[in-house]
Image 1: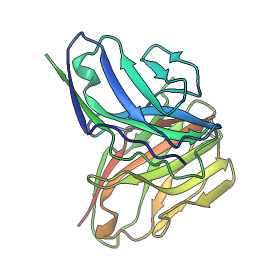
Image 2: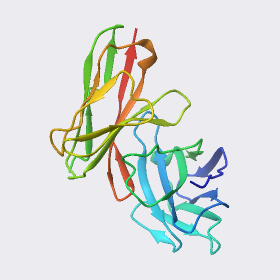
Image 3: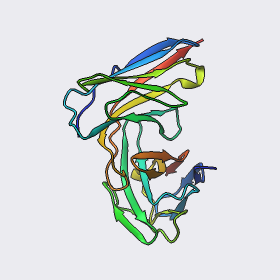
Image 4: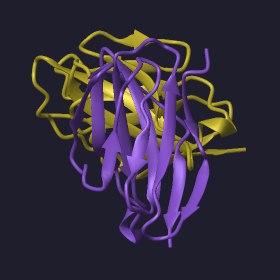
Length: 113
Length: 110
């Protein structure tokens, strides 16, 4: 699976859009970009995933560059509850039941009041 | 829809004791997994199941047993607890690559 690079930490003001970047320059054609987050002491939470088109759901938007070598997760109106570690994962879209889910170190996002 | 539930939330065991961590999901997912997360580290896969009656080992299975008698439940058994098993344990169920995690069980073995 392709490796990802994320900044170790970011701050964002409450109410503003939080834009979290991820580089995945070695991504393969059949690999999806997944985003999860882990709020302190809780289980990781699935946010969104995409292949090449931009995606949006009730939690966030995912923007993938045309060459697919990088992506940005956007939380449109960040709240204090969005403070968490955000993980960008590149994987083939299949069940994870029999595969190690490699979260890496992620980006620690802090929302500032 | 409760999602993935785990009990207990916290547990302290003495070395050599056995116990079962409970996990249940109400989303009718076939795939379920158990992970452990140690401080400052990522998740490591212990055991997984692709459906009722079918289980298999993950990355770190030693010292743990699982069974899957129903689609909903996937308990994890510690046979003889050791201090090295002190960790946070997460259960997850999976649909098409989207993995849903429970709140975790924080286990301390003294």
